[in-house]
Length: 622
Ligand code: G6P
Image 1 (cartoon, rainbow, N blue to C red):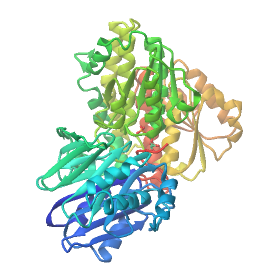
Image 2 (cartoon, rainbow, N blue to C red; image 1 turned 30 degrees about the vertical axis):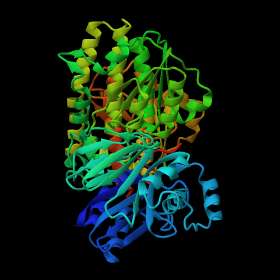
Image 3 (cartoon, rainbow, N blue to C red; image 1 turned 60 degrees about the vertical axis):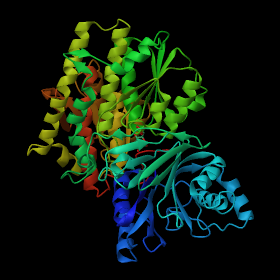
């Protein structure tokens, strides 16, 4: 949801290249327009903004007046909230004087009042954005109360603002100063040698440094080539040491794959191994992260579990409902975060809340969890992003350890969320005495076999015998596809449908297999295929009956089935096989052919797989 990059360093740096390169790593956050502002060594603040993708901006910069070398600059890639995605609404937004310019991620909720007030005092607005009020508000303080002190001007301005933001601000009058601030929007500092970086996310600066300072909510940072000073909005200095990022720039590159999504699908066996790393030792479960919660008695009164999440993370949560209920015998509800807060939730210390959010920044999930906390609920966060906003709202954090995921749609983070939820379910089951050591050993051993089994599915998909890509190419012409499943097959069907619609724009719906006949079966015809999750399970026969009902309506049926199940061929036109595992773990394998199916269908339709229209990876607005 918008990406920010900033740079400050020595004279004579190719700031333009640093900003464009950083933006290209952040494009997954939004891609409807982009812009940069560079303070050149000659002292001019040069602004370039273009609607469309970063490539448009890069072309405009290279073919136009490319800013000369300089010391300072900011850049932005936008996911529009206020104002259409055109050149004028693209960031950075200058003030009236052209001395200052601002980039922003988030929403200024009181922008209408501020805009009116600023217009009344003579400020001229050029765009329809909420961001532009920040430019003029900072201008107001800069030239009046703060006597050209940029940090103080930003501080004064932010004290007037309500809403969410991560911002970067520069002034033509301060060639060695870059100012950033955050409140409910991600922002990190990359610490270099005589140069500093500001960014929404780590991949944007990884090429330059692995030393990172994570800003907290309500903090302002002043970056100079040789220093970084963090303070709070009320002016108190903050001391904080850097984190060292363990993955390198290569992890955030395509590595020979045509798309990040395909690379990330193929990385899933390794990502899953990392998610399990250190958590299964000599066949035993070790969830060190839970120990503090356990010691402080936060589990003692837990009578139910609430899983709060959005999108693919919600599907992982829905799957976990089946697993936790089965293994730990606690009632579980999986709710979509965007609705949770509006149902006047009944939560308290007896409700264990689990937030699943790969980005750790999804506004709907953060708001829901904040509310649950206020009502006294213990909170566990499951996220991929170290020190992200959700981690500050949680009693315990379980990291996915999936490595960077650049493709907008979740693939490996879905798998790793699921893996961590399985471990948590097992932990709760053992803690409540519902799972014997023998059962736990069987589950953990099966879980440890999954990466190799996944690899088998992925290797077959690359071999001459692959059936997924040819099938996806044939199906790519249809306008609608249904997905059905029962029990753990149901959220798997939902996730398969979500992947397909997100990247191929084919209308896809997932249903509980038994529910289909209660209405949606009316949509089936020979041009509407149906995908059935028909892996070995206690509901297998029932799913097969549902497939028969579908075939009786002349719809084409594609089954995801367990290797060796030749009988399924009598009920399906096409079969995608996955290796056998425990029924509870089967979604980890069943989703793989569905991800590949969505990928190949999208490629066949000429869609932008890594950056699907209208989506963003991290949605920091409600
Ligand atoms: C966005 C993405 C989805 C993702 C959802 C939740 O809508 O496009 O792919 O599943 O956010 O993201 P989270 O970071 O909270 O898991």
